[in-house]
Length: 342
Image (cartoon, rainbow, N blue to C red):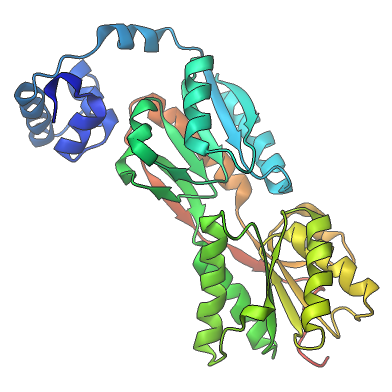
């Protein structure tokens, strides 16, 4: 390693600790175990690391703004989460800036640009994944909290925080629920499956439940919608029904918006709901409870996730170490699912 270019993240990696821990050792703030402090100090001495005072002074002059980068604007859950994040940020004396990321935009690139342009204190990422191509993550020297996802590539878990559900397990439980109702031909409706690690995890959970029940995975029963909108769900069901109509008795959609579009298209195609077709959603948006039939869904604890996003960020800004939360989702039973043949 070139000792002239070593930075605080390199020190943290070599010492096997978080960046915040190294910061506490350098600045002599907060408690650090004696053995950890000694290890960090030895590495600092070995590599002749000198803290960049100009960078530290710049950090002191940073704004009091945390940026929320949002990928997936068609998902109403994110709008609900934003309201909670904004309220909690005010309670904790931080300003919130919201920035939409285009579907084909690299999340890490967007985060770095916003950090440099806005002098941010931290970044909260709603949706999306982080791919550390060319080790660009080293440029992001402010805290990062990922919400609804912990999907990263080539990044140590010590270098970011996350709040997510176990997507594979949640999809497994949803599919198992439909199987227990007697359904054996269950279609799977995704969106942008090629781009999202979360969607692939949910597909794997669906496959896990089928495999456990001795049912071979039928790729023709998987429909990949264009986006997460209700319209895309409507169109995706039309395409699925045209290709496989009569071959499935249930649909598991990986977003409530897709499921609601699916319900509408199924009605127009002559299905009696839920007698002829059961539809399961994912997310737990409020609108699903008021559709007819009301939507059975996998509900994410998104209010709690939003609150924890701000609490995590506040902790990181107070030099706490990065941490990760994996939460459970729950199935909310309503009217859109029934036993096969009822």
